[in-house]
Image 1 (cartoon, one colour):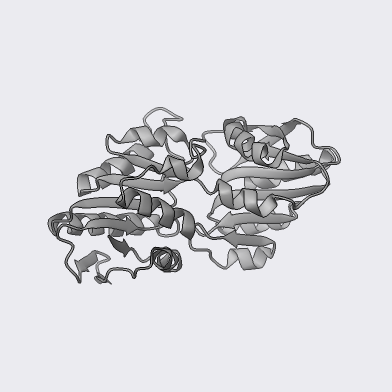
Image 2 (spheres, one colour):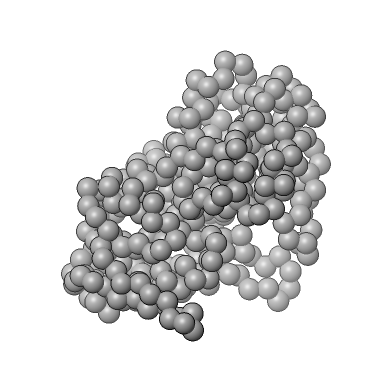
Length: 316
């Protein structure tokens, strides 16, 4: 097994390598004055089972190209099998046409990696499940659910409600709630497809009064959805509001949105390299997905079941 990593999230890559009892394979990575990327593998990959990790958030177009070049270099170096590991799948929110004449960008990303030479893709908590069907090669879907369950187990003595910020995430919330023996609800919202990153939240479906509410989502970007949902939960009588999201983008707008929201704590993971915005927020805790990724890569390398690691609950 050889583990390669791009430049976007070296901390996570090093943690995964440590969990696997190995070190990151050496790669010469440079950028020319024109902005073009140069990649050269500094060790042989011939006949090896290779895994290429890269997180995609800030500078997403650069990081995608860098990972594609790594995959292409491995293919041309006669690697036996190449697995592209994308803890956060880029362009995942563009998984369908919301308006006429739009691209389906999430599909294109999968096509690019397969064309570059990837034999398999791995990602964590996809925005929508159908992304797995965008490619004809194997696509292993992991979930950070066990991390969040362990964090909240026995945390509250009073009743808990698991709330999805939209109807589409109810299945995710239901799986989470099953482990905490909690109620499930969701926030009914409406989004204008012509105005990005703006959400109007309307009402809560489910019991939250005198309960600890845990909002469960896959992504926090500007925080507009989460902030609006938290406000409504408090208005409906929730004792506390916690937020769980696997992928913490925390773009600049999130500081203003989340700092003024009635949120007690935000729990995210290190699928993305965290910027200074979480320090400014002050109530963000980051859990590591390194063991989840390492266990999955071990199973793939050994041709063992990946879904067995999650007892089938990686289908959310």
